[in-house]
Every structure is written in C-alpha cells, then in structure tokens.
Length: 295
Image (cartoon, rainbow, N blue to C red; front, side, top):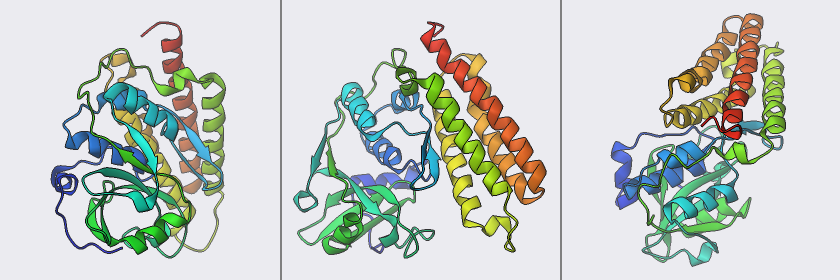
C-alpha cells in the first residue's frame, strides 16, 4: 500500500490531529480519531481505559482494555455501534475499523517485509476497486487496491468492524470507573508488572556487539513503555484531584530511566526496576481507592 491522496473528512482531520496513544494502541487511536471527527469528548474513554496486559506471543505489553470491552464501552457511553462484517462488504458512505498485518504496510518500516503484527486503521470504500485507508498513529492517508488490502488482512483474518457515528458527544465523566476496577486487579496488576520487570532485566542482560539503541528488543520494549506512558497521561489528565497528579508523569519518568540503559546498562536497569515497583504500588492504591469508595 502506498500513499496517493488525502481527500476525506477523516483524513483531513489528520492536519490538526495530535496522536493520543502510542504505537501499540492503534485501535484506540483509530476510535479516538473517529470520535474527534464528530467533535465527541474523548475524556470518558480516557478515564475508562486503564488496564495492563502482556502478550507473550508478540512479546509486548500495553494498557489497552480488551477489544470487546472497548466496543461495549463506546456503545454504552457514546452510542457508537460496532458491527462485524466481511472485508468484501465494505461499502461507500460508511466507516470501518480494518485489521491489517504490518508486514504488508510499507510505511511501517520496523515490520514491513520483516515481521508480522496486527495493526488497526480506519477504512472506507473509495470505489469498487479501492479503499481509502487512514492511519491515525502514522498520520497517513492513502488509496489501496482491494486486492492489496485483502493480502494485508488475511494473515490474522480478524473481523472488519463497521463503526457508526456517535449519538452522544459528551457522556458523563464522573460516573465512569477505570476498566481494571471491574477485574481482579489486586492479582492482575502485580502479575503484569512482574512480567514487565522481567523483560526489562532481560534487556539489561544484553551483552551483544551492536549498540543497544539499535537492538530490536530494546526498541520494542521502549515502544511498549511509551505506549503505556501516553495512555496513563490521558487517563490521569481526567482526574481533578492533585493526589494522583504524579501518577500521570510516572511512566514518562520511567521512559527516561529506560533510555539511560544505553549509557550505563546496570545503573539504568536498577533505576528502571525500582521505579516500576513504585508505580505498581501507587497504581494498586489508586485502583483500591475506587473499590473502597474513596472516589
């Protein structure tokens, strides 16, 4: 798929679009751009989106709520309907969340022709032969032949989702609880943080000949940390109380510590793991405040 033109309401929005989430939150970026096109308030989504996950198959972690829970939330809160459909039924005048394999997406240079990764974009039919694809994270808009799109979709064969315009533009924020408060967070959060700590120490054990900045595992784990950092900034930005203000920047500080591994590997690992332990304790206390009625 190669860039050709920008000529739709969604793609024109990219001109003043500030990407809210990181590279591994592509689905949330796509949903948020769609809400933005319709001038809907994204803060309820930011408030709800609080999770922590590790995917062993991809060896990456993020803070995105599960796909089905995300769709349930935007349906309840915004009146957005998400209907699974076949790729060959993508029609003009409608918008779709399209899952593709980054292996076939030329502008995703880390993966193109090298590795497989599920990636979501927005798509609409341009004509019978092509789709207009808009990628909110990479700020790309392009026309793609349907045959090429089918090739990029076929790897994972995840459902294409028709997404409707929102009916509610400003859902009530105060009644919304973070997703993880509805789960066994006292078990899930420490377990996920322990796995992240393990991966950081694995990177810290690297003693290969190449510069750490050029190491693919280091870059991937850094991308994961940045993804969570951006998500947490959005989430805690919806909170008005000052007692959680420091939590919004904690992951950004962790980014800095992780980068210091490129200067002093052992010291960087020690500082990063120590900060991660503190973040886990603080976030556990934050979630517990909801459970005890403190919020």
